[in-house]
Length: 146
Image (cartoon, rainbow, N blue to C red; front, side, top):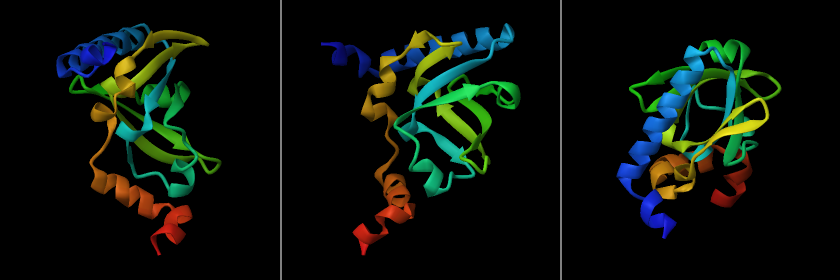
């Protein structure tokens, strides 16, 4: 029954609008925050090395504080963008997260917002061609392809 609601495009748009308003509220009030987001819907520019990306879980925590917080912006009221460093080498990348794929918004250690849409595969899965390329780019998968 809940799937009948959360799998509707109109509900996804409603949730994205709510997340947009919450993040704008936090930014206006100069409040640092964290998010967990569905990795499958995110884009990294430049793309993360496979050694780093393979260590991220499907719903990873991103702490938006200090320098990263100063780079936070919302693009077209649909995408959260920020710069962050990843891995022990602090590999720099600009991250773009569709608002509907943000699973949690966290302040301190408390969940401010929880979004079930982030778990709906049809909204958060990239086209298979990109996924296949990511699979091929992971050195751990080379022996499976050959």
